[in-house]
Length: 166
Image (cartoon, rainbow, N blue to C red):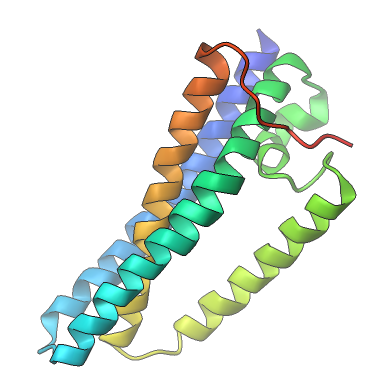
């Protein structure tokens, strides 16, 4: 029972984190349409949405991050500890109790994302909104894929993705 509570906390915490980013960035992105957009703004918007949908949503989330996180949520439900219970979202995202190489990649990606966020904050509208709408596309794709993979992990036979435990 405690394992399922930890798993629920893990996916809920991750969902709140991603959902909060989607909500905040959507509001900024929608401000883009308050401006008179030229043809090159529309092209940049289409490229941003397509690129981030593919690179972040499909390649980053659907093919790599979401299956691993779903596997870690399933693992957590069967291998709970006090630390894993309290820090379930961080455990599921791979910030601890994961193979060393993956942990290094996780921390480097996190710091890289923080750096990109700081850079994008410096952009003026409509450019910031154009970038943010692309990011929202990738994050929404990622959240949807996380829910699908987690459902597969718990309700299908033979979920084949690794939690990458040390």
